[in-house]
Length: 330
Image (tube, rainbow, N blue to C red; front, side, top):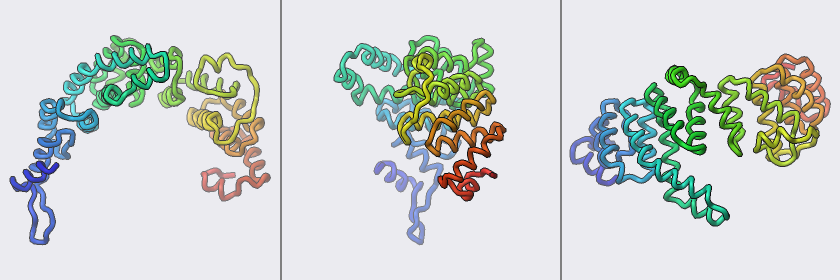
């Protein structure tokens, strides 16, 4: 940093005006900052080619975090020339990431797992998956095709993460083109991740729903019909649970998950959710869950939502002002 500032003054990119304020030649200063801190990306489009060259030449001298910042900034600008730089970094990191995944899979004790997650390999893994996300951001046919090929040649952990990255940024024209070439949809890949993985995040289901796939509704309705005591982590586990209505403690993990399910069903707007949502309002005492289910029913056009809102008002839990602030005309 000090070298960059010194060179900016020496070359005239920085100067002090008559009022003791810093005067800058932004283009010249950007080039100097790239030279000394290549993970920084200038605002000027003209310097982007220089940024790629400097990152390429000096990446080995940067920390994983600095490299990630530089790659991410180029990708956010959707700079196509950065693709070869990012893919090269992926290829260099992949053997080490696979070694780490193998070490994690073979760890049999908590101590061994902790050893497998020590800082250096963990940083490499973080950079690796950051690179995959940044390649997707570039969003050219070449970028999407590279990720598709990367997914096909790797084992489950990497394959699942690439599929999630492909889905996370939506379905663009580039993605549609590659879908047609590969003859499979991103939503199908995401559904395979949900079906085949031993554990997954609820965000996977939300992501499937945000892409407009009706299979997300089927899974969410399973949650509502069979609210299990304990964990919502495993889809396969939920499919085998008995249908036992139960009270869920406010602010517990299960409470947060159920609230998220209700809100997601409201967003998806599938009429199959009407009766399961109404059952939530009848079975659960928690006012937040009842209100969320009532709002979802209102969105779906079910007139019983008015009855639910009236009950909440009569119980004194909410006031007309609360409903007004939430945009609910009751």
